[in-house]
Image 1 (tube, one colour):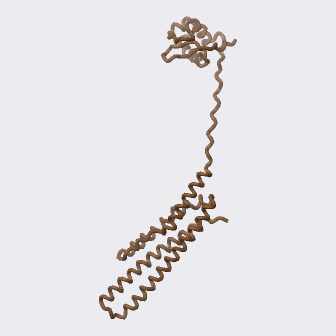
Image 2 (cartoon, one colour):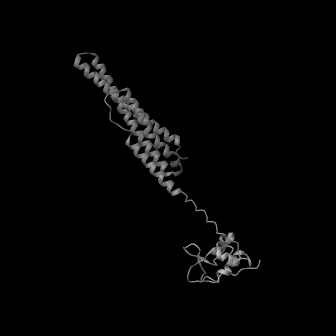
Image 3 (tube, one colour):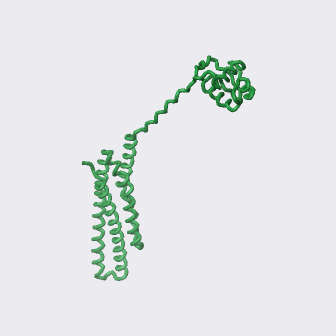
Amino acid sequence: MTISSSTIAAIQKLGAQAFAAKEKLVASTNDYAEKVTAAMKKNPHDPAIAGLQAAWQAVAQISKSLESIEDELAKAYAAASRLVKSDPLAAIKVGAQVVKDVAHDAVAKVKGTRTATKETKPSGKKVPKAMVKTADAVTAAVTVEQAKKKVVAKKPRAKAAKPVNTAIKVGSNPDKLFKHLETILNVNDFVEVNQSEVAKAAGIPTGSMTAAFKKLTDTGRIVAGEKANAFKLPASAPQPSVES
């Protein structure tokens, strides 16, 4: 059984709560210290000072105990996180949320503590380094594992181009045009042609010339040049026309 996200979250939450409670106790310790100092300045022989000193020592001891608890929780969190790292699936589910929550909850509670104790000296403590380092390690483990597990998307197969129908029916407009062009074109040089004159000579309607030329170039019977209306014959013999 793997460590669940709720278990990791519970450890993280306890660590944050221990940290926040310790901060409050540190503030209370400072408060008692100020009270003892003020009382001794006012009257060193005041019997109430002994009670303040006892309370001060008690709060300081509790603060120290919570610091030890906080350290133990940080160790537990680190150990649990190492187990999560050894289980990639659990790491992916748990890691991101834990990393996001570790600093957020603790810092929020610390801010609340400092707001309530503005007159006390801040301890300057931050979120436990052990938890922050462990959280970074979990993030790195998740990233690496996701990269290993990532399936490279298969490129879609290119659709096979439909074969061009190179056949031209005998007596069709392209056939008539080609028979005429064979008399004026050659395989070496591009020759500019006047479509109106060619249409008349080949017996093709002028409006059909564009389609006829396209059919001849698509089927490789003629080669188009860079200039408009410039063509030549291909080096190899074209496919013959077919009967309709």
